[in-house]
Length: 242
Image (cartoon, rainbow, N blue to C red; front, top):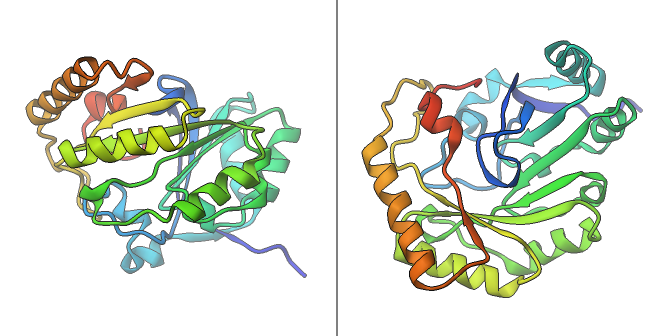
């Protein structure tokens, strides 16, 4: 039997990782297509909404790696597996293949689908979605993701915060998993539409939320939390592929 193909929305880079624990790190992105969530403020609907399914390519590991290798010039770097929700794709063989070539792998997921190959990642970013997303968190599934990772990759919490309710959710999530480093990110309330990326970001509003979030963290003496922006959004707005 042929190995299952991977649905890919786009492959691009090298550019910097724009958020979270690896912010600023040169990275090639493999963005998969498909997601089991529909967050109200999703900034990658072109990789989520099924009406864009025709734009996604069913690719083999070798086809993906040909593009990753060409983009990186064959020099090992970090490959970010994103989406959508990349956990719904069969990525274990890709990770194994890339590791043999000296590359590192980071994956970000909401923690709704657990895969045995999580334990082979170098970095696992778990980003459960707060109330503003209009999604609900199944903490049993989230804990299943932690269990299959087996403590092997660097595993962190990344939480998007838009308002007080999101902030309370973030504090609860951090209290549930005190062993996980916490990264807080102010939400972008002007994300791109799925078929265009020229929507102007309300930078003033985003930075106002950033300052508000910093004030909340410091006033609460939540000194273990790291507050970081979406660096790529500050540099390039909603432009894709950067």
